[in-house]
Image (cartoon, rainbow, N blue to C red; front, side, top):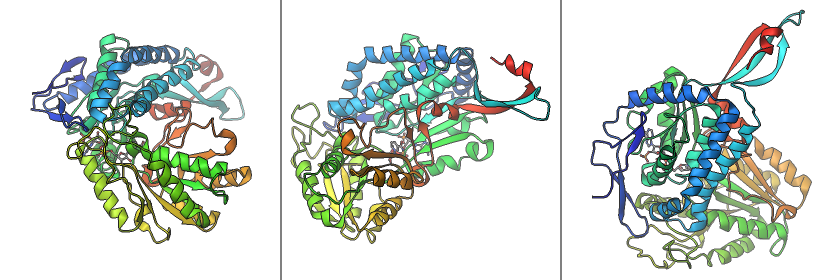
Length: 515
Ligand code: NAP
């Protein structure tokens, strides 16, 4: 039997009482560890985090909590090698892809440590200026933001066990709100190990950070009116969470990050060997292959002018044919595995659906694997599909295949392109490629209403831009409509989710003593 990972709740490590669910190496097929949450005393654990962890965090100032984040960064940095080993074994990722999750998480924490330090030694955040309520200026209204007096429950997706924890925990802890994280089962090991290291280092107040691995059963039932839930995962699970009584009846605040059919649009009419064209091709291939396309922000639809459809297909296909796939432990491999057999089956099924509406322009499904047994390894090469009638290909605008798959689509003019992009019904990110600054800016504003982020790549930022799919802590992450309607990150904006706004009506003298 493999090791059963412990859960940390109510300031103690405890093992679930069930047999546990096994986690596997998606390349070698070996069982790695097991997780289980059966029989945990959830009411006591949530109460402990809420009462002990919350009180201890709220007793600190923003600057002191920012210093805690900096301490967490040090702990994680000291244990990076172990995280890389776990990511290789459990997520099947090559080193560069593990870095997106591990170092991306550490970078995000570090960014919030710096941002938090600017908030100073206070226990609340002023929200705007005081406003006089009558003719006499003595009696005024000052809006304030104070930490919510509950727990932040994170229910996370399998694709970012590291970053997915810290991009949420950094603003929550900085805000003064204790965290309970339930990672996706398939890749829970890395999350559990990171929490274990931070708990063992003793850098956070007791009850500030807890982890429950295994089933989500009963978690939402624990939620009280001042708790918040941040969920990342599929639209189906999001719907279950939204309709849970805690959310529907107790007004528990919820943030949802769900599926997204993200787009890349070439706004230039110029073809191969122009900067805009080449930048699009490079970015599409990068997005299709980083983490084997298992990024919620990955490019799924690629829009190019009619006249460039064939050349774009050729250029993207040529680059994809150089992508080596297989065992991430082999240095010759550029793209590792999907995280599990279930994901491999889901990608295969999604591809079959899309193939009914599109033709295959580059087929990665029969690509030989390096150092991996195709009967065991959950590896699949990148596939580019194409649909010459973008309007008719309804499934392409609607189906998220969570793997190395994208579809090329031609458009007539900019109005047509932007209308097609919006058929994604709200996305996390769209990227635009061109060299006409005014045209790029106009399209960016046009798409801002349906996208959490618009990433504009012009030749002058070819070496500087941060990448279509890279989520930077300074920028908003989330998207309207089908993307879940959530908002995360965006610098200090992220703190709002973990605060309550209140208007304090008092004399100027009283307001002057708020601390
Ligand atoms: P999922 O099946 O919805 O699972 C997500 C999380 O929800 C897991 O921790 C899962 O636990 C838990 N869960 C499952 N059923 C639940 C229930 N009834 N109540 C409460 N929690 C429940 O999603 P997934 O397949 O792991 O993730 C892939 C999806 O996430 C993709 O569609 C992708 O687009 C989306 N995603 C979005 C973002 C974003 O930021 N917008 C980022 C990454 C991924 P178990 O693992 O134990 O089942």
